[in-house]
Length: 483
Image (cartoon, rainbow, N blue to C red):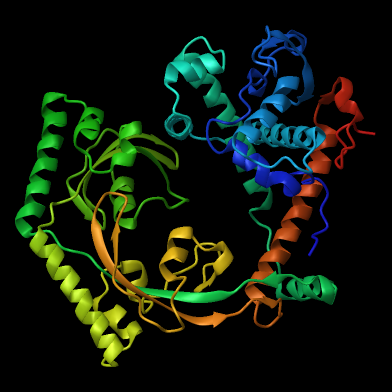
């Protein structure tokens, strides 16, 4: 099915390619991404040529959009980085990539005009993560990375990454603001579906529901108390002796993923992040305060509230996971084996066993059924399922109970689970009654595209935009040349 949109116009057609290139460090690594202060000074800027073996050349300004400029090398670097990531460039033109850059800068410019604020702490955290990911994937050292991009030092490199990430975040937040109040009525959904010719209606892949029962080994009361006492010692050392909370994170936290940021997370009152128990403690604290130890499903924590900026809270945390004995592991495994035997014998249904015994809070009350995060219902489309989940259920027959699966969580904790699939629906052409929620989402997306299209057309006309040189020959779907 073709949704009639222009150039989100070029965004929709090749957004998949661009997102690959923007995933980590492979953003458009050029100084043209920064806000300009003087247009005439920006007309001649030194940067890398596309051929890195040749000498440096003068880099021309391809376009000016509001307070932003786009250099010729922005497009070159985008293409190079997409290719480096293995993205197929078939059917993607230089003009399309240029159109996407124009759109991004239009959004970012008006985000600033609309006083949209993004968290600098969150941006710096993202930069840290991107660098770590890129270094791990490329095998390069930081010195090699800096040399590859011809930067003077790590600070200037990070500063440039910060500006790129901030611009991208502003653009993203502006897009969210444009469509945040867009809704569709049932009548609009019906009209949307009826206007699709029967031979062009979308085909939905095989769907099914997934349920699981999870049993986690429990730490002994003595080991729990040991973790609590250790956290209290950390807290006292910081408060009474002036020790560094960040150093404690690096040395002791069991949340290894957070070490690179010193345990830093930015929480938003209006956008839930982290589990409820964590948020409740953080939002009840005052700036500079360190919490008492508290428990979540991941273990025991203390939080240091570093900064409050309106609805944003910058917090650092230390997580300790109480040690679980081998005896507790064996008991948990025996328990789930017994549950599986009872279900197979017909003594209890899978759903009732989940409500009675599962240690997974999110699914326990739902009879073990997983919620699809993309659709907020129980149905999972096989072709869009998380690869790890797909691997666990791909060979299961309808209502078959799986063998015991052993998993390790992000923090290294072990758990056992059994799974089943049910209500399998084979691949089929869209049916209005059966697939209403999916059709509603398609209708909503089309309406959002139209709203963005109208916004973009309006803002292009009222924003200072200058397209230079050969780029004026591009066949834009949007009116960037204001003809």
